[in-house]
Length: 268
Image 1 (spheres, rainbow, N blue to C red):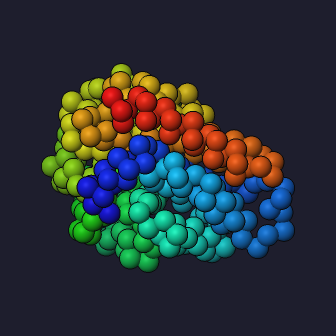
Image 2: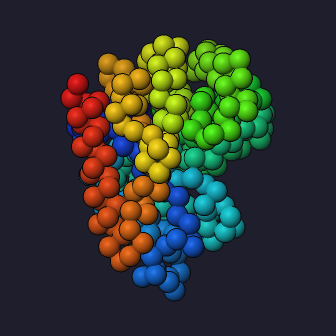
């Protein structure tokens, strides 16, 4: 997926919503008990319910990998379903890979060749070698961790403004057409510092909803003239209800966020 295609979706849907597909087997509705592929069925219902409001889906691979081959199969089924039914959607594999050389190359092959993902989240601690293999693929994206939304980001990322150095250095490896940065919604004023460093790159923004971040604050400090944001919500959407109405509740939650995005970001 190209940057222009992604911007086109944002403009058409008046939304920059990314829905995180993080299905926890212990939290799935009882209606899915006994299903052979409950993670996939849950995801399929969520996808169908939210597709009109979203431009991106982000499955967190840990929620599938923990179940071995059975879980990985359902991840592949999920990505395949999105690309078959909603080919205009971006799919980000939230894998947070961070290795080098042949290992990084094989991670890239896993998500870009064996699965039709558009992007992968990456930990850049090992430097350029951990990111370049992903940039070798045309119309694919490296999503580099910059400033994350968790409290212990202060342990390293915020020490001596390390996150700023990471972002400014990583910008030399890619372009606004194949690299974006993770910037958490829980520290919105720091988004302004990040946007000053990378005015043209997309920011993938987790932390809205269950973690306390707000669309209004993200828009105020992180948006650029073309929006330039993918705002992710996972638990706030997929677990909006634990009952049989889970898909309808997810649609309502996604519609609410989309409406905020249209008002605070797209239409401004």
